[in-house]
Length: 457
Ligand code: ADP
Ligand code: GLC
Image 1 (cartoon, rainbow, N blue to C red):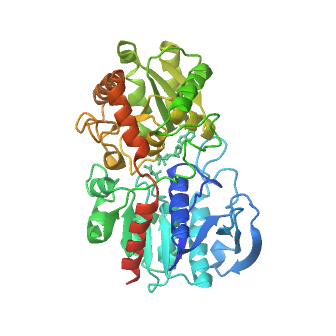
Image 2 (cartoon, rainbow, N blue to C red):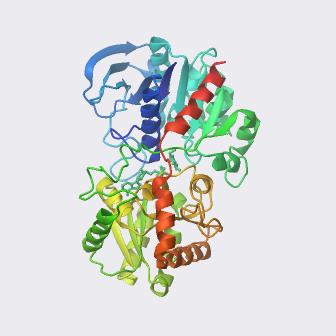
């Protein structure tokens, strides 16, 4: 089978959020299973490839000139980098002030069209497009090409000016959304199979509460909509070998983990046994860091402390800073996006909070569990599919779920998790369950292959 996998992010080359990790993990698992994968990524920064071959792409005038570089990454796996006007930038989506590049619609519409042209050159059995950036690709492909479209986050639709509808050759009306162009509505309508990143989110998005306005178009595709829970790349996320960790450990020997906890505390300037609750996140409304901050007055009583690593929205960062000023012994903030610090938190914290308002899948909780931090999360989206509440199932429990996405819900879940930590036996069971669960991409990639087969036939 030959799959063309189109994406705007691919770890470790370019990652803004979980999209980059998810596509990279799926790609590796497909390659390992012997699937031929042509991965197509925007050429943001002229990365060098091995054995490069340059091909001029046949695109409409407004999307050109366009070209593709076919070559290999240092690990020998193939990659295709596509160049269209304006695509090369320091950040895929945002300018220096954190605002979207004003020409994002043009950049990604051209990329989406160019991906279809790569498909013409490479003749895959199927095109698998991910998220809004390559939603319009389905409108540029011939009807005969089987397609799968994965929604990683319905909140980002790439909605833009209606004039772009005129450049989409196939079923432009499917991309029309209240006079605008909506890359996601069209992809949902045109794909042979629509996948989203967890079964629970697949159900949620059919409701007006979680459908982000597109619950109608999604309902129309319900028979072809499936949820496949993401995995994590367990070679990259392995506490026994992680090169970004100064000490290593595994589920049967946690000595190294205790050292990493001390290292984490000393970096913050904290001491003692009080539980550390990590938060590793993009600072956006979705992730609910404001809900975590609102628990600050209760932390002293619980004897817990919050360590936030995150970057993004300025108002949310200000909010975290003001809580640090008010509760210096209880709240600490590392502002930024830093992979080594993220891994130190997963490996050294006691708990990891995810107070998300919605969460298509979430990778943090799986990374945390693999590194021995117990997740405390809201009961939404993929968090429900990946965390077993230890107060509901004491044998298989891996974390704690707040039923209500509210401050009270999170405070209650923090209370329950801190209580569990006080019993060494309970804590060991919960940690061991999370650390030994198979979080790899093996099962999800096999599910994707079934969906590919179904789309092809
Ligand atoms: P989303 O894609 O919505 O941001 P996910 O949980 O799917 O959420 O993926 C987030 C990815 O980004 C994870 O790999 C996580 O470890 C990483 N991450 C998030 N915030 C930070 C940060 N501030 N520093 C380092 N890594 C981060
Ligand atoms: C999105 C979602 C996140 C998911 C990731 C990878 O960024 O917000 O929940 O894990 O995509 O699919």
